[in-house]
Length: 552
Image (cartoon, rainbow, N blue to C red; front, side, top):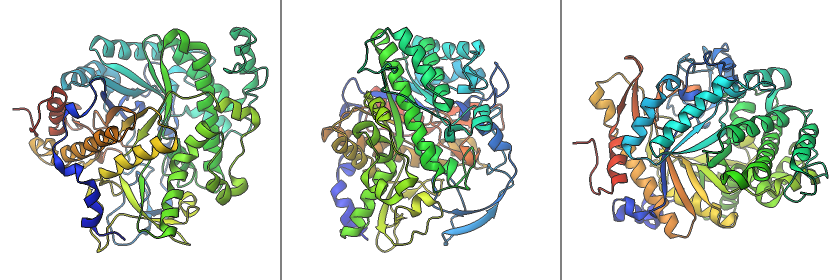
């Protein structure tokens, strides 16, 4: 293990001066981010159909064994790693997103807050079941289209650019119940054949090619393609930045291995996560192909996807620890980006997983050649990685990597200040490293940091105390300094989105954790109160340096 002082010497840029707006290019995009299920509420209004999180949040509890280091799940900070707990339900506080923070009815108020803070962009997701309540794509819900039109138009009126995510984990429930969602085994994809309208085959009119495309697509991927097509057609005249999927790794692992996220599957962890990911990659590629061939020329937008990465630093200079850290990154980033950039999964994943990892057909590989315009990166924290022959992790995904994640330096000092969630430590140096890794591994792509932030506990304290989020201010200062340094390194980072605009429904943690720049008072009508971090961003974006805390 490294000693703290020696390790941090190479990151002196974090201490040289406070980061300022002038450290970024004039056209650099600063925004905030949210997702539909976490903020919208109105679960039975406006023609919306149920999604898998509606069902998951209401499911009865079960006895499960958890590793306390599993991403996005909070367990007590005890000195042992494995514990068995009985949940009263799948959500820590027994809550759900029925109302959430009522953004559906308060979007104008929330957009006004974004504008007053000075952000130029807003990343949000569309609820698939608001557009197609059953997910099948047979009848568009006009009320859902109208709602997102209103949101987009309100943003543009304030000079705020929409960055829209098509899928942020809220799969229509009907698709899960009827065809097992992302696991659908009836998918037959004949991309790349003379019937598929790829960029390499424009010998037939698009209308005919499109008809043949939907005949070729079966099951789940077909439904996602129809949904994506509908969104491009309905909103693409104003939306110029599209994200197909948010963090497909979390859908695969937390949804189909550990089972702590919807749809809560955990019985076949050695196969289902990899099948779910395979189908997500193909669904992403289908949406990209539709956009590039049917809409891009006229609408002039860009399309990409969002991956997440906990930076993995070798815990020593030993060859085996360096190899373990490299494996860890391949299992996070290479799993999704290698197919898009190189046509197949990383070799190390093929070697370890064998037949458990699905294969791409030649037709699939042709589809994957449709390039993405940017990579979105969600990054929160980092870990030291040590090679082990038997991993202490419970999830098969982690065991297969033959590594252990550690959150301390030699001598036991923590890797960084600890946020509220047990998995989240403040390690700003890791963001620069992962940005440079993406740059070098994938030929200098355009990158947006699409989520970055930290959480506080939901505590019963006076309002002025909960609004003074000093650690979050330090977090953003450090991580933005890391982004600025990566740009100096030559990485093509074009934008940064803070997570999140509002305190909200934090998935399996319910409302027990608060990630927002804006405090939402759950006990007093969901009133919004900007925190110190929001005012820090206000000053930062105005170019006012050397100040912190609340507005005077």
